[in-house]
Length: 74
Image (tube, rainbow, N blue to C red):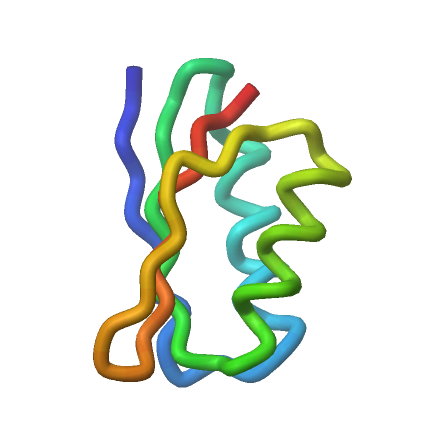
């Protein structure tokens, strides 16, 4: 089981999701990915992406204008 972190801070929409998608393609079911982004559109975008892709959102938090999503790859 791999745990991967993607730092997408400083990237504007749609790049955090593009970077997330590219990284998940190299992962296996059961792996976990943490994504950090400061784009305000990241929260609704990542929720929609997770639903469309069939992955599981473990947590989504915001602190100091940075969103951190922990996603379980399915």
